[in-house]
Length: 270
Ligand SMILES: C[S@@+](CC[C@H](N)C(=O)[O-])C[C@H]1O[C@@H](n2cnc3c(N)ncnc32)[C@H](O)[C@@H]1O
Image (cartoon, rainbow, N blue to C red; front, side, top):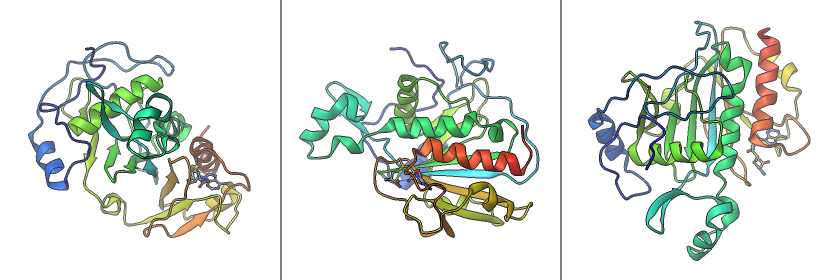
Protein backbone atom coordinates (compact mmCIF):
# COMPACT_ATOMS: atom_id res chain seq x y z
CA UNK A 1 0.00 0.00 0.00
CA UNK A 2 1.22 3.49 -0.77
CA UNK A 3 2.43 5.49 2.23
CA UNK A 4 2.09 9.12 1.32
CA UNK A 5 4.34 10.54 4.01
CA UNK A 6 7.58 9.62 5.71
CA UNK A 7 6.17 8.51 9.03
CA UNK A 8 8.44 7.46 11.79
CA UNK A 9 7.23 4.51 13.70
CA UNK A 10 7.31 1.09 15.13
CA UNK A 11 5.00 -1.70 14.15
CA UNK A 12 1.42 -0.54 13.96
CA UNK A 13 -0.27 -1.03 17.29
CA UNK A 14 -3.91 -2.09 17.20
CA UNK A 15 -5.20 0.46 19.63
CA UNK A 16 -7.17 3.63 19.30
CA UNK A 17 -5.91 5.61 22.28
CA UNK A 18 -2.60 5.65 24.07
CA UNK A 19 -1.66 6.05 27.69
CA UNK A 20 0.50 9.12 28.22
CA UNK A 21 3.56 7.09 29.29
CA UNK A 22 3.17 4.97 26.18
CA UNK A 23 3.10 8.07 23.98
CA UNK A 24 6.27 9.35 25.63
CA UNK A 25 8.03 6.02 25.33
CA UNK A 26 7.08 5.60 21.68
CA UNK A 27 8.15 9.14 20.87
CA UNK A 28 11.57 8.34 22.28
CA UNK A 29 11.80 5.08 20.39
CA UNK A 30 10.89 6.08 16.85
CA UNK A 31 13.97 6.79 14.76
CA UNK A 32 13.34 6.12 11.07
CA UNK A 33 14.48 8.59 8.43
CA UNK A 34 12.73 9.75 5.26
CA UNK A 35 14.31 10.83 1.97
CA UNK A 36 14.60 14.49 0.95
CA UNK A 37 11.74 16.15 -0.87
CA UNK A 38 11.28 19.75 -1.93
CA UNK A 39 8.36 21.96 -0.88
CA UNK A 40 5.61 22.53 -3.45
CA UNK A 41 3.49 25.42 -4.57
CA UNK A 42 0.20 26.18 -2.85
CA UNK A 43 -2.44 24.08 -4.57
CA UNK A 44 -0.22 21.18 -5.55
CA UNK A 45 -0.85 18.16 -3.44
CA UNK A 46 1.66 15.50 -2.58
CA UNK A 47 1.97 12.52 -4.88
CA UNK A 48 5.46 11.29 -4.13
CA UNK A 49 6.67 9.19 -1.27
CA UNK A 50 9.23 10.03 1.33
CA UNK A 51 8.52 12.66 3.97
CA UNK A 52 6.01 15.33 4.80
CA UNK A 53 7.05 18.53 3.04
CA UNK A 54 7.50 21.89 4.71
CA UNK A 55 6.36 25.36 3.71
CA UNK A 56 8.66 28.31 3.48
CA UNK A 57 7.34 30.93 5.89
CA UNK A 58 8.69 34.25 7.00
CA UNK A 59 9.75 33.29 10.56
CA UNK A 60 10.39 36.34 12.72
CA UNK A 61 10.60 36.93 16.46
CA UNK A 62 7.41 38.99 16.59
CA UNK A 63 4.33 38.24 18.66
CA UNK A 64 2.35 35.44 17.14
CA UNK A 65 -0.62 33.19 17.45
CA UNK A 66 -1.32 29.66 18.57
CA UNK A 67 -4.51 27.92 17.55
CA UNK A 68 -6.06 25.17 19.63
CA UNK A 69 -8.75 23.15 17.91
CA UNK A 70 -10.89 21.49 20.54
CA UNK A 71 -12.94 18.29 20.35
CA UNK A 72 -11.76 17.33 16.87
CA UNK A 73 -13.33 14.16 15.58
CA UNK A 74 -10.22 12.14 14.76
CA UNK A 75 -11.04 8.66 15.96
CA UNK A 76 -9.49 5.48 14.61
CA UNK A 77 -11.20 2.09 14.57
CA UNK A 78 -10.75 -1.26 12.90
CA UNK A 79 -13.34 -1.42 10.17
CA UNK A 80 -13.27 -4.73 8.35
CA UNK A 81 -9.64 -5.74 7.87
CA UNK A 82 -7.94 -2.40 8.38
CA UNK A 83 -7.83 0.66 10.58
CA UNK A 84 -9.63 3.77 9.40
CA UNK A 85 -10.38 7.30 10.52
CA UNK A 86 -14.10 7.22 11.27
CA UNK A 87 -16.38 9.55 9.35
CA UNK A 88 -20.16 9.89 9.13
CA UNK A 89 -20.05 9.63 5.34
CA UNK A 90 -18.15 6.39 5.13
CA UNK A 91 -18.83 4.52 8.36
CA UNK A 92 -22.40 5.35 9.42
CA UNK A 93 -23.46 1.69 9.71
CA UNK A 94 -20.32 0.75 11.64
CA UNK A 95 -20.75 3.72 14.02
CA UNK A 96 -24.44 2.98 14.61
CA UNK A 97 -23.55 -0.61 15.48
CA UNK A 98 -21.38 0.78 18.31
CA UNK A 99 -24.46 2.74 19.49
CA UNK A 100 -22.87 6.09 18.67
CA UNK A 101 -24.18 8.95 16.57
CA UNK A 102 -22.65 9.05 13.06
CA UNK A 103 -23.18 12.84 13.00
CA UNK A 104 -20.45 13.17 15.65
CA UNK A 105 -17.78 11.74 13.33
CA UNK A 106 -16.65 14.66 11.17
CA UNK A 107 -12.89 14.74 10.47
CA UNK A 108 -13.66 17.10 7.58
CA UNK A 109 -14.27 19.91 10.11
CA UNK A 110 -10.73 19.58 11.47
CA UNK A 111 -9.32 19.37 7.93
CA UNK A 112 -11.04 22.58 6.81
CA UNK A 113 -10.10 24.36 10.03
CA UNK A 114 -6.43 23.35 9.75
CA UNK A 115 -6.31 24.42 6.10
CA UNK A 116 -7.86 27.79 7.04
CA UNK A 117 -5.07 28.31 9.57
CA UNK A 118 -2.18 27.24 7.34
CA UNK A 119 -3.52 29.01 4.23
CA UNK A 120 -3.75 32.36 6.01
CA UNK A 121 -1.37 35.24 5.29
CA UNK A 122 -0.75 35.20 9.04
CA UNK A 123 0.84 31.76 8.76
CA UNK A 124 2.77 32.69 5.63
CA UNK A 125 4.11 35.79 7.36
CA UNK A 126 5.56 33.62 10.14
CA UNK A 127 3.12 34.72 12.85
CA UNK A 128 1.76 31.22 13.45
CA UNK A 129 3.69 29.67 16.34
CA UNK A 130 1.93 26.32 16.67
CA UNK A 131 -1.33 24.49 16.25
CA UNK A 132 -2.68 22.02 18.78
CA UNK A 133 -5.56 19.68 18.05
CA UNK A 134 -7.31 17.95 20.93
CA UNK A 135 -9.43 15.04 19.80
CA UNK A 136 -12.73 13.85 21.26
CA UNK A 137 -10.71 10.93 22.61
CA UNK A 138 -8.46 13.42 24.48
CA UNK A 139 -5.39 12.81 22.34
CA UNK A 140 -3.36 15.99 21.90
CA UNK A 141 -1.58 16.64 18.60
CA UNK A 142 1.00 19.36 17.99
CA UNK A 143 1.48 20.61 14.43
CA UNK A 144 4.51 22.75 13.65
CA UNK A 145 3.82 26.01 11.78
CA UNK A 146 5.78 25.17 8.64
CA UNK A 147 4.01 21.91 7.77
CA UNK A 148 2.24 21.60 4.44
CA UNK A 149 -1.16 20.16 5.22
CA UNK A 150 -2.58 17.76 2.61
CA UNK A 151 -5.13 19.66 0.55
CA UNK A 152 -7.33 16.72 -0.26
CA UNK A 153 -9.54 15.18 2.39
CA UNK A 154 -8.47 11.65 1.52
CA UNK A 155 -4.81 12.45 2.00
CA UNK A 156 -5.56 14.31 5.22
CA UNK A 157 -7.36 11.24 6.59
CA UNK A 158 -4.41 9.05 5.59
CA UNK A 159 -1.99 11.35 7.37
CA UNK A 160 -4.09 11.57 10.55
CA UNK A 161 -4.50 7.80 10.61
CA UNK A 162 -0.73 7.37 10.41
CA UNK A 163 -0.14 10.00 13.06
CA UNK A 164 -2.64 8.53 15.52
CA UNK A 165 -1.14 5.09 15.07
CA UNK A 166 2.56 5.98 14.91
CA UNK A 167 2.50 9.09 17.12
CA UNK A 168 4.89 11.19 15.07
CA UNK A 169 5.50 12.37 11.52
CA UNK A 170 8.84 13.74 10.41
CA UNK A 171 10.04 16.25 7.86
CA UNK A 172 11.35 14.98 4.59
CA UNK A 173 15.12 14.63 4.87
CA UNK A 174 15.47 15.61 8.51
CA UNK A 175 14.65 14.26 11.92
CA UNK A 176 12.37 17.14 12.79
CA UNK A 177 9.01 16.02 14.12
CA UNK A 178 6.47 18.11 12.22
CA UNK A 179 3.44 16.52 13.81
CA UNK A 180 3.39 14.58 17.01
CA UNK A 181 1.20 13.38 19.78
CA UNK A 182 2.07 15.22 22.98
CA UNK A 183 1.01 14.93 26.58
CA UNK A 184 -1.95 16.82 28.00
CA UNK A 185 -2.57 19.43 29.27
CA UNK A 186 -2.10 21.85 26.38
CA UNK A 187 -1.46 24.72 28.81
CA UNK A 188 2.13 23.56 29.43
CA UNK A 189 3.02 24.50 25.81
CA UNK A 190 1.50 28.00 25.86
CA UNK A 191 3.65 31.13 26.21
CA UNK A 192 3.41 32.84 29.61
CA UNK A 193 2.69 36.25 28.16
CA UNK A 194 -0.29 35.17 26.11
CA UNK A 195 -4.01 35.81 26.14
CA UNK A 196 -6.20 32.72 25.79
CA UNK A 197 -9.36 33.51 23.86
CA UNK A 198 -12.17 31.02 23.25
CA UNK A 199 -14.86 31.26 20.57
CA UNK A 200 -18.51 30.34 20.81
CA UNK A 201 -21.63 31.60 19.12
CA UNK A 202 -23.36 31.39 22.50
CA UNK A 203 -20.96 33.79 24.25
CA UNK A 204 -22.70 36.92 25.48
CA UNK A 205 -19.71 39.01 24.41
CA UNK A 206 -20.43 39.73 20.75
CA UNK A 207 -17.48 41.65 19.31
CA UNK A 208 -16.14 42.94 16.04
CA UNK A 209 -12.96 40.87 15.92
CA UNK A 210 -10.90 43.66 14.39
CA UNK A 211 -11.93 46.10 17.15
CA UNK A 212 -11.13 43.45 19.73
CA UNK A 213 -7.58 42.72 18.52
CA UNK A 214 -6.70 46.42 18.40
CA UNK A 215 -7.09 46.43 22.22
CA UNK A 216 -4.52 43.65 22.66
CA UNK A 217 -0.98 44.85 23.56
CA UNK A 218 1.41 44.64 20.61
CA UNK A 219 3.93 42.41 22.36
CA UNK A 220 1.42 39.78 23.45
CA UNK A 221 1.07 36.31 21.92
CA UNK A 222 -2.50 35.21 21.34
CA UNK A 223 -3.99 31.76 21.84
CA UNK A 224 -7.26 31.09 20.02
CA UNK A 225 -9.45 28.18 21.03
CA UNK A 226 -11.96 27.08 18.40
CA UNK A 227 -14.22 24.03 18.36
CA UNK A 228 -13.71 21.44 15.63
CA UNK A 229 -16.83 19.42 16.43
CA UNK A 230 -20.20 19.36 14.71
CA UNK A 231 -22.21 20.45 17.75
CA UNK A 232 -21.74 21.42 21.37
CA UNK A 233 -19.47 24.17 22.59
CA UNK A 234 -15.92 24.84 23.64
CA UNK A 235 -15.60 25.07 27.41
CA UNK A 236 -12.04 25.01 28.69
CA UNK A 237 -10.81 26.14 32.08
CA UNK A 238 -7.69 27.88 30.70
CA UNK A 239 -9.68 30.22 28.43
CA UNK A 240 -9.69 33.79 29.80
CA UNK A 241 -12.27 35.35 27.53
CA UNK A 242 -15.07 33.84 25.44
CA UNK A 243 -16.05 35.78 22.34
CA UNK A 244 -18.82 35.58 19.83
CA UNK A 245 -17.67 37.15 16.57
CA UNK A 246 -20.94 36.91 14.68
CA UNK A 247 -24.59 36.53 15.53
CA UNK A 248 -24.60 33.60 13.10
CA UNK A 249 -23.21 30.15 13.85
CA UNK A 250 -20.09 29.83 11.73
CA UNK A 251 -18.03 26.88 10.60
CA UNK A 252 -14.73 26.53 12.42
CA UNK A 253 -12.93 27.43 9.15
CA UNK A 254 -14.96 30.62 8.74
CA UNK A 255 -14.38 31.56 12.38
CA UNK A 256 -10.62 31.06 11.90
CA UNK A 257 -10.63 33.11 8.67
CA UNK A 258 -12.31 35.97 10.57
CA UNK A 259 -9.73 35.79 13.36
CA UNK A 260 -6.81 35.71 10.91
CA UNK A 261 -8.30 38.56 8.87
CA UNK A 262 -8.55 40.77 11.96
CA UNK A 263 -4.95 40.12 12.95
CA UNK A 264 -3.69 40.61 9.42
CA UNK A 265 -5.25 44.08 9.49
CA UNK A 266 -3.84 44.83 12.93
CA UNK A 267 -0.34 43.72 11.96
CA UNK A 268 -0.63 45.11 8.41
CA UNK A 269 0.07 41.78 6.75
CA UNK A 270 -1.02 41.97 3.11
C1 LIG B 1 -18.80 23.98 13.75
S1 LIG B 1 -18.78 25.17 15.02
C2 LIG B 1 -19.29 24.20 16.36
C3 LIG B 1 -20.73 24.14 16.40
C4 LIG B 1 -21.37 24.61 17.70
N1 LIG B 1 -22.79 24.40 17.61
C5 LIG B 1 -21.11 26.07 17.99
O1 LIG B 1 -21.66 26.91 17.29
O2 LIG B 1 -20.33 26.39 18.91
C6 LIG B 1 -17.11 25.41 15.22
C7 LIG B 1 -16.59 26.44 16.14
O3 LIG B 1 -16.53 27.70 15.53
C8 LIG B 1 -16.62 28.70 16.53
N2 LIG B 1 -17.77 29.53 16.20
C9 LIG B 1 -18.80 29.26 15.36
N3 LIG B 1 -19.63 30.30 15.28
C10 LIG B 1 -19.11 31.27 16.07
C11 LIG B 1 -19.51 32.60 16.38
N4 LIG B 1 -20.59 33.16 15.87
N5 LIG B 1 -18.74 33.30 17.24
C12 LIG B 1 -17.61 32.77 17.77
N6 LIG B 1 -17.20 31.54 17.49
C13 LIG B 1 -17.93 30.78 16.65
C14 LIG B 1 -16.78 28.00 17.85
O4 LIG B 1 -15.53 27.88 18.48
C15 LIG B 1 -17.32 26.65 17.43
O5 LIG B 1 -17.05 25.67 18.38
